[in-house]
Structure formats: structure tokens, C-alpha cells
Length: 56
Image (cartoon, rainbow, N blue to C red):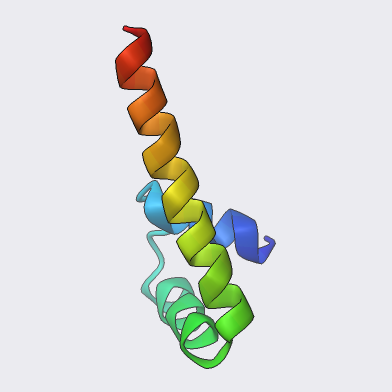
């Protein structure tokens, strides 16, 4: 699973294994580039949620 997939799974509540969550948190803690990916994913998720609410 790629870092993008892991972040998405975490945000969607699909990353259930505590070991995988801990590993991802560690990777995000030590890598500024990967933290930037998390921030980007959060921004996209908010944007899509906002866009979806205006369509309905």
C-alpha cells in the first residue's frame, strides 16, 4: 500500500490495525514531505466535501 493509500485509509477509518496506524504516524512524524501529503489529502477531502454539499 502506498503512502497515499495509507493516508486515505486512515482518513476514511479503514486503517484498523493498530500496528499499521502506529507505523504511519511514525512515518508522518519523521518525514516533512509525507506530512505535506497528509495536509494535501486533508485539504482535498475538505474541498470535495464542500463541493458535494453545494451540488445537492
